[in-house]
Length: 72
Ligand SMILES: [Zn+2]
Image (cartoon, rainbow, N blue to C red; front, side, top):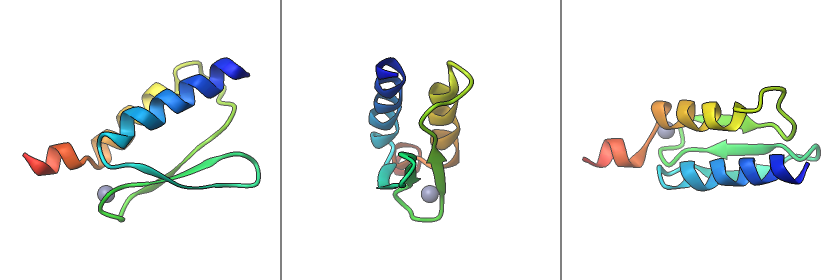
């Protein structure tokens, strides 16, 4: 369980560089993620079935919205 948490925190740190932040944490421990422009939102689950879930999620989020991409 601690390993999954670490992977999620790593994903949160990765997308934070692109403007995504944790808007809030749900009662189930899910993260509601919100982008810098405010038009994109997604949920980070706590216990994904796929081991690379957070990496794929982070890549998807960055593809949807990134302050780095827009800033250049
Ligand atoms: Zn956005």
